[in-house]
Length: 397
Ligand SMILES: Cc1ncc(COP(=O)(O)O)c(C=O)c1O
Image 1 (cartoon, rainbow, N blue to C red):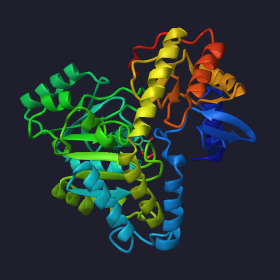
Image 2 (cartoon, rainbow, N blue to C red; image 1 turned 180 degrees about the vertical axis):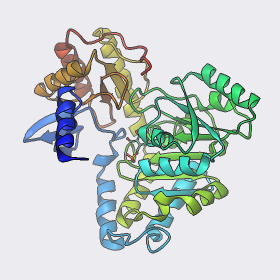
Image 3 (cartoon, rainbow, N blue to C red; image 1 turned 60 degrees about the vertical axis):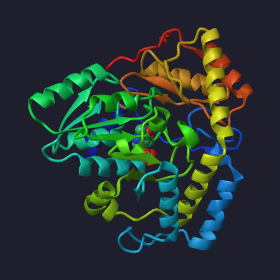
Image 4 (cartoon, rainbow, N blue to C red; image 1 turned 90 degrees about the vertical axis):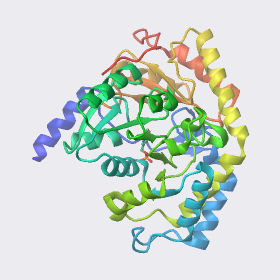
């Protein structure tokens, strides 16, 4: 592409209110962050359990950096599979009750590996239309047949499954356990009820792991589903587990099949051994410290109660992700800026990431009751007149 064309594209992006830019911040204990010397309460992070602040986790990373090193020095099939990787995998297997696990440098890579391997060239992939970009990307490559069903619409999914049955087409279904921008939880048990034993279900539980189900195993566990009912589970370390990287979990055969094929696995440097040790500590803390899930649940309940009392339009989400829809991109940006002026860090999420601009409130066990009260008060005080005030349904794109 010519440079002049690039400049025109960037200028148009700014004009449409869609220009994206990093903002340098430093996250601090107590649900806070520092930006340019000013303190804010952080309602945009994904550290749902507050594990990122846990001294034990930080210590585990520091100790492991000295003991095991920072560099994995290679891809997992060359020199990048070390004791720290093997022990993290054993910890994950024990926690989730799965036969095997493959580690990836990100959840994005893990999702791509899962779909590329498990959706065969003759299969039809049925995908919730709000699934994360890492799942949608494979579809745009044109190498797989797919259909998107309307968000959480199991009647539509059932109709698609019936049609594929008539055409004798092999089907794979993929969805998220907790939708990242809407916070609603998928009823995996109900989806499995629609599927035959020959129709695999792939689940991205990036926002369910650590938070839902017994010992935080995830959204599938919260619905009483056995992990073996999923063909493959994807989750990551970057949200409730307060680290970085992702993994796929499943039967020995399924994981081995992905290991043999995945370009994201074979041709990419393995996770740092220090990070693996830290993530092992994080999983152990997450399992043991039920109080973190209880504190998060209390914060969610308090936020929803105060928001309702204040007449603030909130979505139906019962998870840490609480979206507030905005009329358009500009009003979302204005609202977010007004919140910042009052000490609240709450990012506006805009198309194309979501069909409709919104403030995506992210609650954490590290927030205090006072901070939640402050959030609702300031949201009400700064609410633009144009903002939609009733967001129980989120329209299709
Ligand atoms: C639902 C979902 N899946 C996958 C990912 C990608 O995970 P990672 O950030 O570890 O690459 C994200 C992260 O934004 C996500 O929200």
